[in-house]
Picture 1: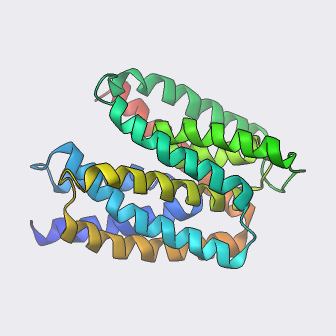
Picture 2: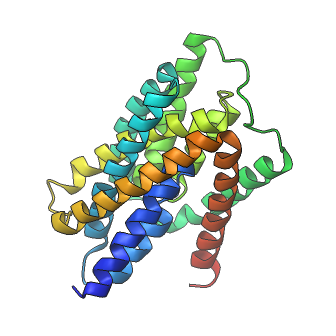
Length: 255
């Protein structure tokens, strides 16, 4: 591999870690860069290497949030457990349901999420009253199952959908929603690696090198999110959602 490709991958991992720590969507940056830098590798190897790099950044961000704010563990852990199981199911579903079928639906959902967020300036600015605990756990299991399956099956926008779900359905502010989403993201990344690692779909040297820069990006992103609060997370969320829509729209209508 050329030195310029290595530098490109490390910079992409840095930026992806930063974006992922704040609003999700790091895969929007990291996966395309891996595909460009590693054209000879199978897609499964690209995705496995991406997950290896991402899990370190996501885990670091979750740990940093947990040290500074009260994470909604009663919500995040059931969602993470369900997401772990259903992420494996989503990965298995790739064999019988083409991902191309899902792209238009995801594009529409992202557009609705973005419009809802932009048209409601107060959405996620402050936390609302929490749901009754048993109902919240049930909804967390359902949300984790759906989002985990989606992340294992397709992936792009999973972090953004998780944050939106935590704000819309569980009445968290954007900062706490982002922190809870990191716990769920860590779980789905771990589930994916359970498939990729035993099947030899991970480039360890590249993945671990990118992981170091992903962690650095996650440190910077979580620090800014904690310093500037929900308004900063919300603004980044809107920007990342717009980029995801543009990317999917390009893939569907142009590429």
